[in-house]
Image (cartoon, rainbow, N blue to C red; front, top):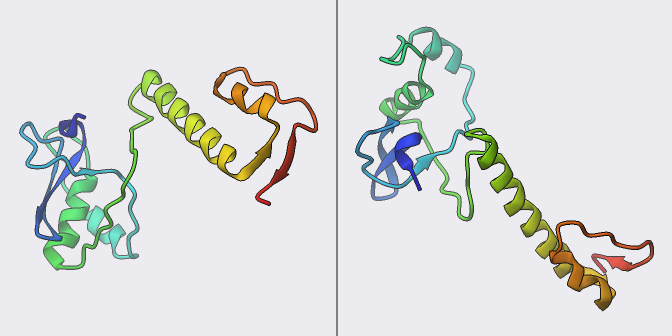
Length: 137
C-alpha cells in the first residue's frame, strides 16, 4: 500500500475533514480513488483553480471546494482497489485479480462438469462445448 501516491482523505468520525493530494506523510490509508460525480457548478469551480506546484489543476482542489461548502459526500468502498493505470505491471496484476475473482464467481453460479472445474485454475482453460450445463440455475 502506498497512499502517498494518491489523494488521501482525513476523517473526523464519519466525515471527511481534509483531502491532501500525494502527501509526503499521509494522515490515513484512505485513498481518494477518483470515482467522482459532480453537479454542473464544477465547471465554474475548475475555471477558478490555479495550477499547483506541479503546474497541474488538481482534482483535490475541486473536492476541497465542495468540502469547504459543506456539500461533499463520500462512500467508502470495501474490497480490492488498485490503480491499473500506474504501470503495465499494475494493469496485469489487476487483470489477474479480476480474472481470478470472475472464475470464482462463475464457479459459484455454474453447474460445471467435475472434470472441467479442476481446470478453472489453469490460465489456459479450454472448456469443451457442452461442458457447462447451466448458468444461474
